[in-house]
Image (cartoon, rainbow, N blue to C red; front, top):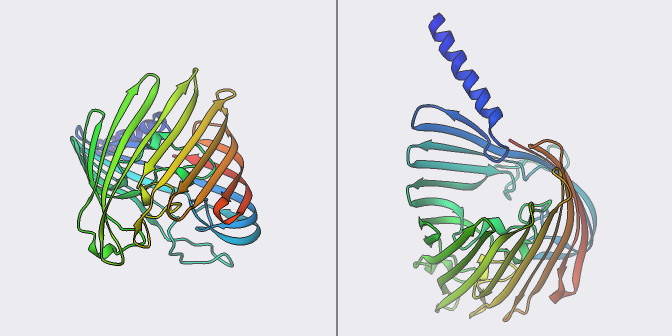
Length: 350
């Protein structure tokens, strides 16, 4: 009994020390054996947001590439972006799953409980060079996303999709077959996977990726049409701590860029679009930083023109705890409607 208690105390101490030693991004790591580890991560985040103007967010929690025309002057509190994840490692095998509460199916309301259902973000298995499951599209460079009060910043012009896929990675090269979906078309006829290729150049200076996309889209009228798009994105270090982040996408990227700022199909035609996203992060000192960002998407068939800019300040009080405030503007210039917003956020990362 004494020996058993000593073993239990030793394991508990190791877990606590490991949790303290890990960074906020890495979460809490538990060593189960020589080959097996279990990690827990995520964050709790609270937001207060004020929107004033003539367009409201389509999803009512953060700006995407499309809003709804509405005279609005509203303050809203939310903790729905909070998330948690678990990673299990067994030798060369990694299994990862993450959930948050931004799903559309709520179990409560704002009158009483403000309850929200969990939503699956990531669920994948990695073995050596292969990944199978749901995660960020290979077409996306996540390091180029702006740091903002809402995750991702100017999504109106960002490559931003999570979906099922099979991916092969070797060095800087990544190739994948991904879930097909003919947005605004006949998705019941989507039998050919999307094909994505990306190469990422890395160094002490940062990284730059070049990506290509090939798809078969199926129209409501029964036609099959090819679609091709490209992307260049990256994060470049500036000085000791600052960085510049950018994304440039063109061609027939459709749903892959702008979060419905552009659609795959407009009637029987394949949409073409051009998107640019720019962000600069400046550190005033070790705990205080500012981000300035801008994003814009223009399309050729529907003639959409969507823009989003913002400026924020974040203060880190501990490696895990930070507070921030952001002001900005979302503009659907093609409809002559826009809104200003201000958002306060508090975040504690595990």
